[in-house]
Image 1 (tube, helix red, strand yellow):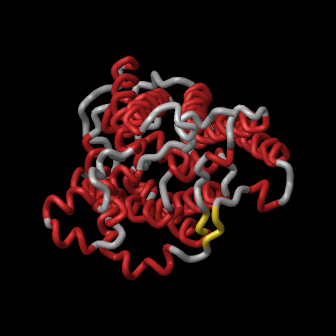
Image 2 (image 1 turned 60 degrees about the vertical axis):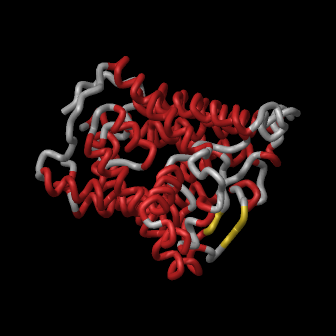
Length: 192
Length: 169
């Protein structure tokens, strides 16, 4: 078990920035090829006219999740050295609610705004300026939101750990859920 | 509308999933995006008003570093731009334009783009990330963070879209 490669010291911080550019390149390439630089497609899901966002997103989640847990079970990847996204229950619920509103209003999220800009969309550049301004506003108001920001921490808890069941059961459920969702979306799109 | 010369969302999604898996395998962390805007905002604030920026507790996580822009996500976003540009040029999607819904004007679009962006910027700080860092990366890790963020994001998006149909339809 010699991976994550960076965590096991295969290369240093300087090389890690080159890796960042390379990984970012594929990230942006697939976002663009999937149509996720286009705000009409990005917001389509909320109007039930275009399901590109959930299709791309849940395909990516399922592929990466199956790969991650498979590599871990095959002892090819040391999961304890992977940085797990920490859970802060209420801040992430409220953050998600506000984020959804911003998504519909602007037609983008941070990564897809950069994608839209790379396709020549100047409104995406305005949205990016807004994202920077919103980050600044957060820093400005931080003394007032700090208590809430740090409220309800749950650590790096995952669904299998929380539910106390084997991760392959959760992975099967998530895959089945995604598959069912895709089936319903395809049916709906054909009917409309 | 647009010419539709995009790939199947399932193919693009699989590519995106493999990219995320590569990030886990090589770096031991997932993808991200929003923090690049936060770091940049902090550095810009320091450039404009260094003393004031130094008093902002939240930005000290970036500004206490020797070179805040020497950051993994900032470099990843540079790569993202290059990759998206390559995809746009290859697919014939590159065109300078100001995109908006059919039934809103240019001024309104300026406000929705900037205002929506602001909500996203604020929300991403509160949630510890965005659709990339929390929803996609957290979701794939089966982290609770990713799933509660995804559910609340879609819920509020649906409600807002129902009230503001003219934004995009």
